[in-house]
Length: 295
Picture 1 (tube, rainbow, N blue to C red):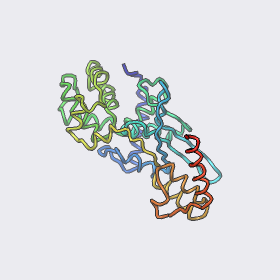
Picture 2 (picture 1 turned 180 degrees about the horizontal axis):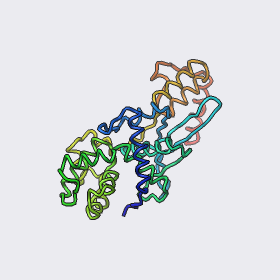
Picture 3 (picture 1 turned 45 degrees about the vertical axis):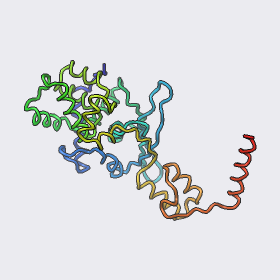
Picture 4 (picture 1 turned 90 degrees about the vertical axis):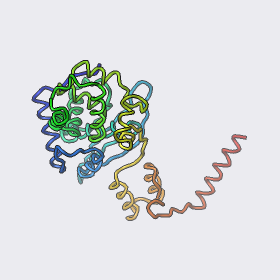
């Protein structure tokens, strides 16, 4: 079973205030899904995003995201490193999780979003991410509008799965986070929670939930359930790299190497990088030596 440790009521109220205030500051009402806008939010907050796929090391889960604070003589810099060897909806949740550490100034931080969380700060950060992506009072109003009751204990599982799938595709909160939210606000029973959480493979496109999600919104559902494996950074960071090259702060090799980290080339931005004769000779020598070694 999932660890159901929760923050105390007064702490939940504080977390909800953090989430609601940040939403309003960024121009989002409680009626507005954040979804893919989470990455635009990082630009607004001047948090640099670095995306790279990191696979798990044995039984130990790979990190989900890392928040890094750096301070130099001019300003404080913040970075979020995002592991893209994970499902896209979990990446969104991981970024929202790190925003809790950012606004509460808990310092640099590395998170692993596992099934069990015992650390109170991590539990608070998970609750913040859920509140930020789908505010509790909005979820409650959706339930009442849909079912004309707050109590879903008598609702059939197939009906609940369709309801969860629609929430999933609109609000981009992971399936398991939605199920947990429904239990947290006591909309579903312990038995319903167990059946939904422990006996549904939400990532199986051929399974019951996968078939429902695909039928409701194939494009979005597929995107949310994709291991993106992307390498990238925010457009602002790419622009900084290009301007540093244009201002002769970095040379052609450095430009090429930096862009290559994010699967980009100088040619993508209209720059032709010429390879010197010496570099070509060195490459050919290396290649020929490799062939001779094979022979």
